[in-house]
Amino acid sequence: MTSNNTSYKVHAHQTTDAKRLTFNIEEGAMVTTESGIWQVYNGAWRKIYPQSGIGSGLGWTRYDDGLYTSENKLSLSSGVETTLTNNGANTIRSQEGIDYYNTATSKLIATTPNDVYITTVIFNYSASNASQAFMHLNLENTGTTPYDRLKTDILFPKGNNETHEFHGVFQYYVDQDFIDNGSSWKVTADGSTCKIWDIIYFIQKTQSYA
Image (cartoon, rainbow, N blue to C red; front, side, top):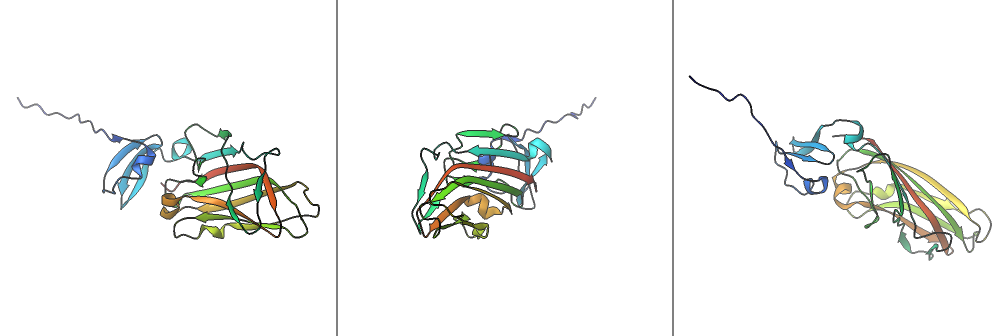
């Protein structure tokens, strides 16, 4: 009597999303991470489960800086580009396990090309000479993709050393260059010494390509 084994078990390698991105691309390779099950198809990692909702990484995270406050303002010298840091002293997430910003490197982060994000940047600001001051805010990537196209000029209403509020919303997609290098918000003052404090980043992942 011949007996056939009709039950097979396949175990995908267990790792993390960070380590998965360092693996060599091998067609058909499959791993499981904290975000789901991934497989290499047509030369790129594709998430095969779950396809949407929490497992896809869709959601939002709010990072409130605790370093630069009304008692300890970030001072910007005229003409000097400065990274707009945020230490995430108070961080609120739509669900556990998602992060779109690295507080240690001050860089926006992403995992999959063609995903879409919206970042809201909020802070208070002032200038010692408001009639001559303005600021530039732009997203800078250390790679080759010119993410600094995401930028705005910030004007100062009259009133030296008066507090003003900035609220900017920026939508962007990420490519492999963004994923490899990350991007940081940079701010440059012109015409006068400026100060910034109470920095908030509210980052939403609105579309998952995988």
